Image 1 (tube, rainbow, N blue to C red):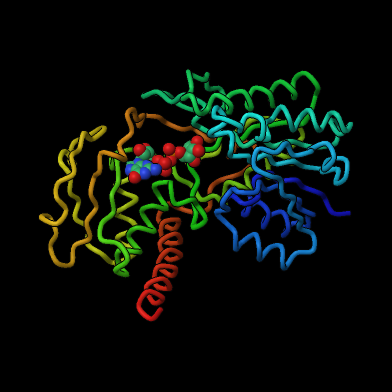
Image 2 (cartoon, helix red, strand yellow; image 1 turned 180 degrees about the vertical axis):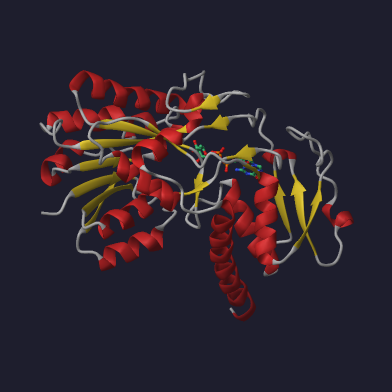
Length: 356
Ligand code: GDR
């Protein structure tokens, strides 16, 4: 009989890649999606639903409490992947009630008597470490004071650990560093860059406005990271793992790789652009800096964060050692895939604009 998996936030980047992976492995997949959440992967979810009789989507309303117990009793999942990203903003308004926290899910598992059969994965994040300059992150990291919008994530992390240790449940956390793809939401810097530059080549935009170009990030491909999420639930005993490539690049390098793929020449403008560390930049008039054929990347103070931590080293070697996992996609290949996807869609939009 095929295994049954339940995935929350199926409409996000990770939810869609994980669904594809599990369907390929022969799982029956149930996904939860909140009405009103604009899916990053609407067309992917539609295609998956149209072509897979073993894929089901369960909707619930904005601010509504989803009846997890009822769903678990019905589908009795072997594995649950809680990717509920609403935790990012859970300190606000109605979300603490509506979001599917680790506590809600783990209690629902217990209430249905599934605590010894259902395995639980929680999508945790490097953000909860409360990053400070100079720290090294592996699974032994001691969390510092996290940013206020990640307090709920810290609570989720310890809840999963607590249920593992107190009730002997198979519950684990993946401490994920940045992971990107053509399905990444456009508010994140990687997608903003690939989409922005692709649009510029098609005459749809004039300039790419960014914040700190010197910020360092460890970027992997989301498709590689969901493999690791699955592996974490296939072990003899549950443990937490850091998921990262172990290699960092600057935002500026990311922009440069994207420009290389598009065959365009970049011109960076903005005061203080060559300084190391966080740039206190004032955008200079773009028009004055423009030369024919140049693509302008301008530093705009609106996108510079008040505090930025960049000197952090990441050690994901436990995943390599214990799970045999290593990222398969280099940053350059990730950039190429993202650029090509955004270029195709920019060309389509440019044609539409021209011919209506
Ligand atoms: P991050 O991702 O904050 O690391 O969170 P993001 O892509 O937003 O920022 C990465 C770095 O790029 C710099 N930057 C800009 N960022 C954005 N968004 N827009 C810009 O114009 C811009 N210019 C420069 C930022 O300052 C930053 O240094 C992601 C999310 O997935 C979190 O949910 C997750 O917890 C962490 O990764 C791990």
